[in-house]
Length: 430
Ligand SMILES: Cc1cc2nc3c(=O)[nH]c(=O)nc-3n(C[C@H](O)[C@H](O)[C@H](O)COP(=O)(O)OP(=O)(O)OC[C@H]3O[C@@H](n4cnc5c(N)ncnc54)[C@H](O)[C@@H]3O)c2cc1C
Image 1 (cartoon, rainbow, N blue to C red):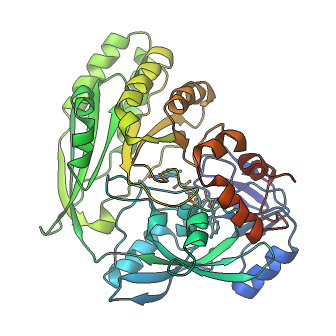
Image 2 (image 1 turned 180 degrees about the vertical axis):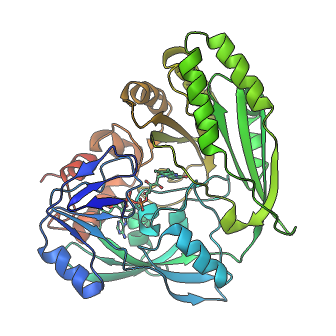
């Protein structure tokens, strides 16, 4: 869990705080079942609190599944592993590596619980690579009546599709079976180039690598492009991460040069263009994720892939013309379509655009203005990142919404997992 002092809880960025009556860490299934039946409601399940939305907030009980961790069993032929849903992704990668299994893709950090990643459709980048929930083949979940239920894709494909992106709304996921691949190495390259060149050939550029993504650096005209491809070459040394230093520099330039945008553009542009290219080979688990020490708040919308380049143009213009105090880069990724009913990637190849804001300042004016653009292009918000949508708007974005809600009612007829935030989000009368 993220931060718990006494009974106070807060998320990673500090944007959500809660004072639940109880923070519970059940050690086994019986205890978990009893807690769900009898603890003060609403009951919200926490991963590590890395969501920016109040999904975990509760005045009743916050439930941590930290004890449901590790590899329960594995199948070396099928390359599948049964894992505790409370396992932190970083720890999971090391456990999997030791049994020659690998996650096909990862997001920017590895601090989340795997169950938390499933909770919000957490994803990395790559036109052929899906979010974590696309690895699911089976799950064990304790429902709102404290009953332990098992589902398997082979026999319960509807239930798996309904609960794959779970929002913690169906029950406490205790174990999942995931389809992995054999260990592999990645060649990771990073270089700067004019963003115009990337956007002119967006489709081709994003499909040219197994994993491709880029950051637009505000006021620079430059994109930092990151590409990863599987290689047989031996692993080398990963260069030190520059995240904190680079953000510190961008912040200083913002503060000194806010009134001289042309000078700011010139200085940032030439600094970015001079950044050394990065090119190294690493084992998969040492390549995808990095540290994020500077606190920010974030909004990310998943757009139809073909809208990506046009929307990014508009977001860049918005930032540079209306919000010159923003210095965080804009992150652009691509995600493969899937069949999970509440997945923002449901049946659609997606381009994800993420905008960030210093956690010490109010992000809403910038985020709300950007949200208007994202929504005008059919964007679906990341469940774990700031957005202002409620059930009415969300249900129109998800063709299987009503079916997912029917499964939710079956799993939690007494609304034990429904907080006021969830009631608004999912359209549930409390
Ligand atoms: C620095 C940073 C970097 C990030 N990078 C990325 C990224 O690259 N890609 C991306 O897609 N997102 C990213 N995110 C968002 C983050 O991955 C998601 O918000 C994720 O859900 C957080 O996982 P968590 O373990 O902290 O879960 P929490 O935020 O604690 O919970 C998220 C949801 O999952 C539910 N949940 C958790 N565990 C269970 C369980 N066992 N059973 C049922 N429900 C459960 C909760 O109830 C809640 O609804 C990032 C966030 C931060 C702060």
